[in-house]
Length: 301
Image (cartoon, rainbow, N blue to C red; front, side, top):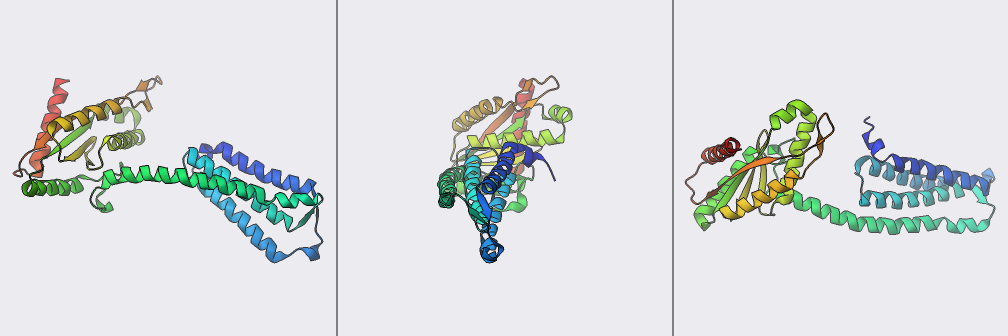
């Protein structure tokens, strides 16, 4: 098993173990065991099962969630509920010597439910952002058989279908559209220096940053190797150029990789853009024009 999920939330794992030991220790010092005849095994099974299931929810949360506010709230809420469930379970086997302690068992669960409600609110907002990003990637329909497994974007086949769709709209509704191709600068050298894993991560990061820069009506696909193509429906050349300039500036601020001297290595992309005015185009000729224009920017640089 990979240790990364455990290392990511190392402090939370320690807190979970500490809460369990604290609840058991506090119970041991403030109670006496019940006579065996007074213990209801069915109640023990029910209360213990609730505590165990709550503990499993915490484990799944820590194994699957990244760091952040939602994860912190989920952990805090579930942990409070877990402590309450654990006390309920222990209460079936002991008698608290200060009798009033029994009345406090439900307080952590109440606090936990409040925290879980707050977490649900922020989780909804988080999921809304993810759904919006997914809509930009998927556009008209889902067909995960033609997605790129590295970036999660749609591949060249899906892009070809969507360009055909836009050409049909151009013929029927006279709606011009633009295509913009982005190319990661010096990607081959980066790949040789840093290896496949970081190269794939750079592709994913670039795809995410392009996706965040897009409108909901745009469509981002991976064309080939380190190239991406965006379809801009009902867009002029000037509008597409302005988008490309903003996206390029955004990507240029990305500094997630380091060279052997541990110095930041900034990402950079080149781009080319064409506007389609008539439907007498074929997919291959469009891509050829984009690549040719892109190569001219490389020579000029």
